[in-house]
Length: 145
Image (tube, rainbow, N blue to C red; front, side, top):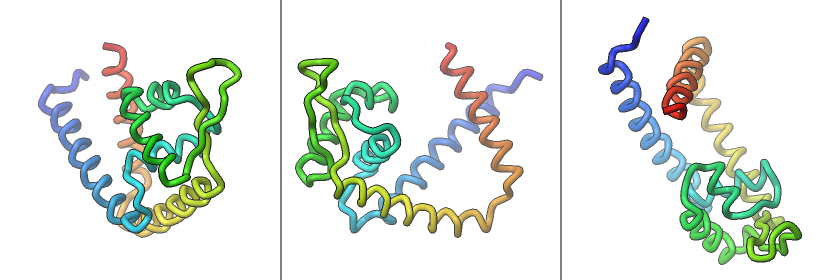
């Protein structure tokens, strides 16, 4: 059955509202870390994927290289990441976590898991699974256009 435009628009509006609420919650949760949401995303990416380049992070996150470079520069200033020579490319250095960066992202993820455990008490697992499937379907259709 074809979805009405109104329903798709309502879903997208709800996703935007959820994004803003979740971002605000994360900012409050990590206020003392002095790491922005964008910086946290870079730390998480490096934690999951290891040393990589700014263009690779940007492509994976769907944002500009300049945006990621700004975040990496901020992380370099507080010694949470370092740059290394990239054997595959002379001008595009590899970015990796420092020991402090690895510790910081682990502490942030631990705090988030505790917070989400509380949130999960008020949510239905089956409804969440259905919502994830629906959102993935909408994303795939939008990506194909």
